[in-house]
Image 1 (cartoon, helix red, strand yellow):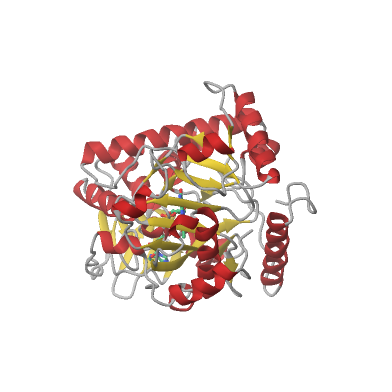
Image 2 (cartoon, rainbow, N blue to C red):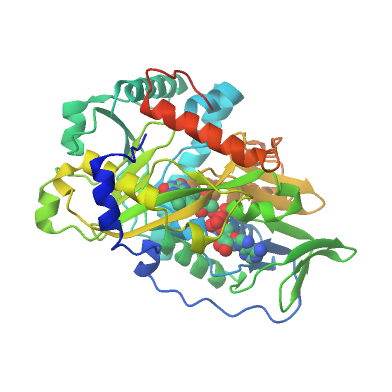
Length: 462
Ligand SMILES: Cc1cc2nc3c(=O)[nH]c(=O)nc-3n(C[C@H](O)[C@H](O)[C@H](O)COP(=O)(O)OP(=O)(O)OC[C@H]3O[C@@H](n4cnc5c(N)ncnc54)[C@H](O)[C@@H]3O)c2cc1C
């Protein structure tokens, strides 16, 4: 979908040279990671990973049972993973698309799952207000947009499906003129509005860290888990300086989840890229009509999306994602992708030619956890082992809902949450290398070709 051969792409290489390859959000709130755990601990629940999944689960468990002793072990700092560096679109999306979900699970189960995620979106907002978490929450919603006829047909199909759900008032498909009154981009040919919000993900993660700590959850930063073993005394998480033993363990490392043998072939990290501009001046802001500051997401296999930050920077992201052989996760190697940056520069020029000279201040990538079926998986392996992973790039609201699912599973309750369509499902494994790598390359090329030549390759590939 995103061309890398255009003149814009070439000019992007020059400008991108000036950008920092660092996660923009981290500049908005400085973090000094807490000290490593140094003493052995016995507790009720040990959680590996300190992102949203871990912290929401701890939050809901503490609400349900304040006496529960919970220890979170995080190798860097709370929010160092996807939770602190995502693009901040709070969406109701589950997996690849609404139509794929309905096709696989039926309309009723899909509708229930969407209702639960919708509730989570509202509760996230309430949580921030109640606990004084300044996550720069903007209750704008966002537009699903089309830039060609094939994408327009996808929007029509989604509106039709949402209509069949019978949820509230009919959704209107805006034509090019009406859509451009909302977001003044000549690229946008049609759009419909989706309920949702924009946030600063890092500040949400840090705020959540503060709240759960105040509730009595022990969050040990700078504490990498080297292995988790079953012993007669319970599950033991071994870290460089201490061990934590508990009857229950939650593996909540998402894109890093393949480090655990049970999930080695279940999660594949794919790198998705974003570019952030320098703050737009009042004069630049006045060049584009964007009265309500909604984000936008282009309908396509490799989505392109854009939004304004609270400080009036433009954040652009998406395009073709990259999978690296052997589930490559080395941030120092992959955080910068000149090809992705060039493609994003071309996207900026296509969407907002008025801002073609605006400079990128940051360009960076992050690992999104993809599952074979492109839906998240939350559940238990039995014997006190729990997991939540594979949010496929839409985890802000989903992890909040996953926290409730995991609360109920850990408390051994059978509830609406524990029967949702993404709970305890059978997970299809990815093939071993080199087949995983070759398959990812082939699929990626096919999906990109469909985005670029929608008339030639029809139908839903995944
Ligand atoms: C680039 C990018 C953009 C995204 N954009 C959006 C978006 O706009 N909207 C949306 O809804 N979702 C988005 N997502 C998805 C969302 O960020 C994730 O689904 C969500 O943050 C997952 O939270 P988590 O807690 O499961 O995982 P993470 O936040 O990744 O937390 C896992 C943690 O585990 C730690 N860890 C790993 N191994 C170990 C170990 N051995 N010992 C101890 N700790 C360990 C890591 O340091 C990390 O902090 C995006 C993701 C990425 C990567």
